[in-house]
Length: 559
Image (cartoon, rainbow, N blue to C red):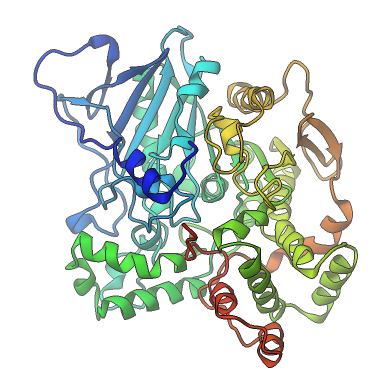
């Protein structure tokens, strides 16, 4: 989708909305799937059958607001499956197309694509969880449309899942009066995903899928989600394989980090108790969300659902029963140049984030950072960018794969270097999505129609892994990753394998992973040397202050 304006995007996305209704008369049995919670009648798109907006849990509304998802009830009814369910509540944002789709609390729905010209029995199932910093995104985004995917990979059943995010999906109420009745609220989005996987186990056979061969995959927050699911006992047995794109267990917050969002929520709502929050209307919550969405939490390391040290289950061998493929892009952080309004605010932003994070490091750790920075070329802005490429994305993925492999788990690592053509983006966060789904006309991250040959290769790798646990293709052997071989697939114009990519950077910065440095920006302190020097020199313009205060958030809209 190549749209010229925010308004055009809104019109196009919203025009796709409709409400699925019960069917009381005749229907086409060839388009129907008989599930435990009803018969769902989909539509046809080329050689694909498409089922949209199938409920996998009860609507999390009314007394179920901020509660763990409840299983859907059995039904012998017949229902349309023509339209996406609503997007979860979020602020509209130009790079999140699903944010322009109608939103609501009632958002726990999934979509299914299959190629009915392929009569392969018991097809492998691939379940996608979208990204969006755990505060944006949804299945209505055209980037995640599965038609091209199942057209080219005809023996795959593809599922995309909606889950609660931001204000409704990741909020800690432990400090709020009555909050003890909402113990699952810090990680509801993950529990939604688990409930969707349970529904898939019970019903995917009706679509020709094999419940014993389910691969979960996702990008960014979705990559973080599928990295966390293997360490959550209640998700055990619901999937066989994981593909984590630009996400890991490092994309989590501590309980302390989660308190800032709660404080802002109470301030904006003037609520004194959970009773006050429960009495708010959906519309009121949406208006509040517009003010605080940029401060949303990531999943909480609560010691309950997620261990305080999320790497520990990998280290202890608790994940060995799951095959894993994980990777990152070479220029992840360049994505946020566009998100915060361009290179000028980015230049003010990243030193503030960097100096905040340096405060918590020991003398020895700071020495490692200095050695790392001194070994890079270019402006300090770009050297800091590479620091975060490593510490927030690549190195956590490496550690996750390394620990998984140490205990006998099978792990594959990739490093994406095929760039976007958009100015300054390079191989940025999310650039691979159009390639993975085969939606080459969705140029929001690539900048122009993606390389179809590379897209075909990538789709083959991803689906081969889902079929067999080995992403190798006929022309490309991809060996597993471990701490000895350190083999990565370099996904470029000409994919190839390489051993121990950026070894020096890995050795210097890996010890810092225990600090769990992440994109937590709600409590950024502007009292750092960079800001003080800039103010003293009269160089800190208003846009720079704003950008520094809201690192990596979706506030500045140039449209």
